[in-house]
Amino acid sequence: MYDNLKFSTTFINITYKTLFLMDIQKLIDKLHPLERKVLPAIGKSGSFDEIVKITSLQDVEVMRALQWLKNKGIASVKDESRDMILLGNNGTRYIKKGLPERRLLNAIDGTMTIDEAAEKAGISKDEINIALGVLRRKAAIEIKKQAGQLKISITQQGKSLKDRELLEEQFLKKQFPLEAGSLTDEERFAYKELVKRKNILKTERVKTKDVSLSDLGKKILEKGIETEDYIERLTPAIIKTGLWKKRKFRRYDVEINVPKISGGRRHFVDQAVRYIKSIWLDMGFEEMKGTLVQTSFWDLDALFVPQDHPARDEQDTFYIRDPKYGKLPKAFLKQVKATHENGWKTGSKGWQSKWSEDKARENLMRTHTTVLSAQTISRLKKEDLPAKFFSVKRVYRNEALSWKHLFEFIQVEGIVVDPDANFKHLKGYLQNFFAKMGFPDARVRPGHFPYTEPSAEVDVWHPEKKEWIELGGSGIFRPEVVEPMMGEQVPVLAWGLGMERSIMEYYGIKDIRELYKNDLKQLREIKTWMK
Image (cartoon, rainbow, N blue to C red; front, top):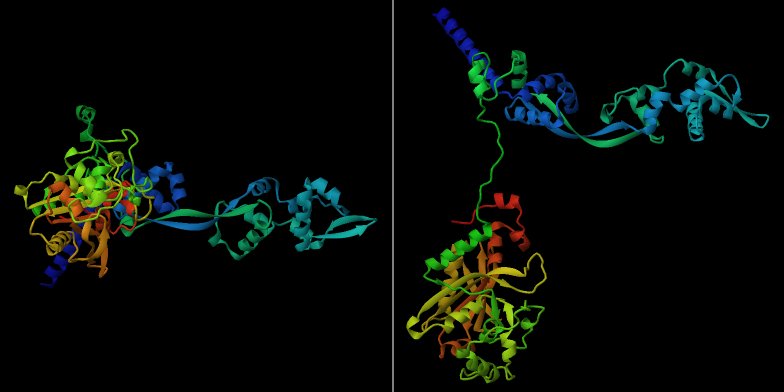
């Protein structure tokens, strides 16, 4: 029984080893020709530059092979920053000609003047002072003044230095660039001496790649990589010649990283627009439509905005130069004019100033989608009521671009025209809408807008920030807006919300300009709008 158990254990070990070697062979069969060249080189050197030299491949080819080997778990690549010592122009020259102190030491014969020694050594005026300083610190020379001249001679220490290399000379014989952190104490001393001098050495922070083999990589090298050429792809010529019978096919690697392909998708702002529209449509609202260019009549006058209101200035509104004027609707002209001047029959006193048709005819880029609400109620009849409408459209304001302001943005507009409507209904519609936008509650608080009375600011409860944030305005249209258009006073619930501010919270965007910067990386990676 013991013999049977021993046999079974041995059989299992042999089988496991065989399967392991088979897996390694499969992995070897997958290797790209570049990987086959680079892998043995890693076993010889962990330096990226050295691997490039050993393989005679281009940098980009080695980098590509290393990435593939890394993906397979065969090698690892670490990016490191190191201080590297490089030769300057003088350093390169001194390697060929010798350091100035060496040339001066060799040139001194007995006692001679400094000028004579410098001329014999071929040393410039700049170099002579440095050479003298170095040799004096090493106690290699003696300088004395004789007959009004400085004379130089070699000491016993200097004679011994003639027969051996200076530390600085030994350092310059090293292979550059040289890693600063790898220096011995003697080398560090020589480096400090040379780096003080002009353009002999320089130190730069260099990014390097350290490459090493994993245990799997070492086992692959132990097993050995075939040098024979693998067939990379099947061609008609290979089939006709029968070459496919004599050579191995490289295994197709289904696990290799491939370039990420980003398919087409809607812009995330457009996704939000579609979603918001679906909310109102599901609530039984009908979409309002209209043109970007409107007359001041519809955009401002019909909404009872006085003609001297600051919003009408060019600093706040984009006016159209050509055509400058549009047509006025004759059906409502007299009522709107009278409402502005004296209140007409609305019970208001109006603005008590003369109303200008020319000013009302001026064309502009619509400043809000409430212009569509005015045009919509002007077309309604009693038999159409009750009625609910919405729009999600672009509007334009002449504002300075900043992290919270755009001169072009999307406004979410809504109106409910119903003889039985009241403020509670307004709040209910807003709460239903914002609940589907991810805000669990909405509230209204007193505010002021030119064309609604009462008016209210709209706040929503942010579930993560745990606070109320303002997102728009609302109210009930004033009689001065409704009666000239419909002929009688009917409650019209109205609201206008900046869409960008609402969706910025969802996407975690702090700067409103990021919504439209068309960054491809952002467009590919940003989350899809809520379903």
